[in-house]
Image (cartoon, rainbow, N blue to C red):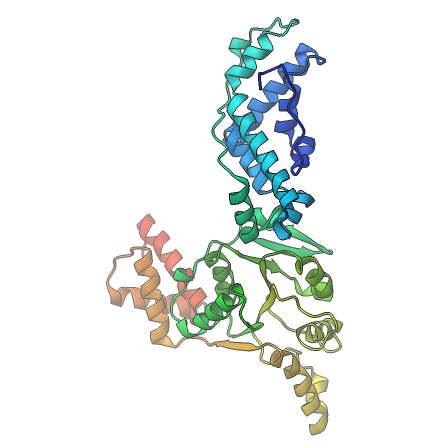
Length: 400
């Protein structure tokens, strides 16, 4: 393909790249002789500006456009491969690779300068880095089958709001190695998640216990541990939308954990019934690719009111049974309790070692105890806050 002598053919699978991707669309306009020279120059300048803004080469830019494509045909080719779809995918990949290889900035500027109406000094225009486009159709399909397409390939976490999935740009980077002690509890979550990812029977999980003991942190660390896992944060206000969320996720070839933090309900809260039915008993079955991991500080998920305490024994028993019925529907119930003094000190020591804090152990534990007493108790969260505080004090040369 000689620059300027033939137009870039349209893409088949990744049509939205040509239609919506500013860089590729402008690239087609570079060499259109029906445009004015001013329009062609503007198109070239837009390309350079876009690549400079992203810090990518043309090959890298188009690689991302393909990897994160929202093309329905691409999603179909991933879920239901066929000879025809694979052939269309191979055609697009070959075309993009050819564009990246042949449409270098030098070649394009030379072609623009050779047009009959060219008057500008094209040698003065900036260059862009072509880079390389190394994807093959087979590699792309295998990657998409493991990591998804579109937003599910680009983002690992989402929040469900108003009936739609909103990507989370900055996921908490906490890792399992950042969490100290509580190995028994974490291993139960890890083993259940591994079973889930390998298509084996796995359970919905309720993490129960004292505040600051690592329930939510364990769930977030699990997300960062497994690249193929995706997570959806479900605010309590959106629980009624669970059946709708299941419908959105069931046909996506990825594994999703839906998380609900601080799970408690007031009496007569309709969301209690929705979640209870969703976990066990609803006609809307939970998809095989979805699990629910929830945290709570309360064993009884329905808050007891003064009226509950005043009813007779039978009524009180019914209220307790109803409250416990939801917790019982989680197949795995894991308890996180507040650490005693020695366990708290052990967590502090391990965190201090990670941060390379080198002070006498007696000084470390005494300072940690004072810090914890001021904050009303000991917990892994308090231990981490203390170590962060201590690092700053040491760095600034202040007493601790």
